[in-house]
Image 1 (tube, rainbow, N blue to C red):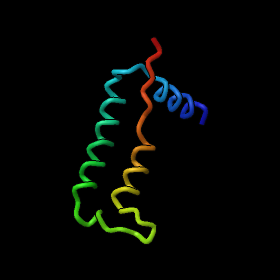
Image 2: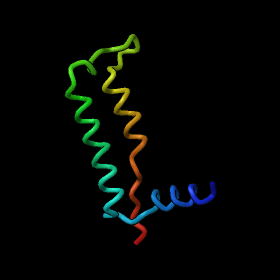
Image 3: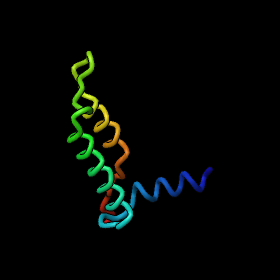
Length: 70
């Protein structure tokens, strides 16, 4: 369990330009773009938010924060 936590912390604190983080974040951004373009995801809930907007918020929270340690 502690190894998993260390790996997660290292990923969050890695240098900018890390190919894994950049690729992961690019995948998140592309997922958001696909969801936004899908007509079915434009359905609005009683709250006023669309399905696309709700999914975008969830996906953005999954992005890896890239920190420059230099």
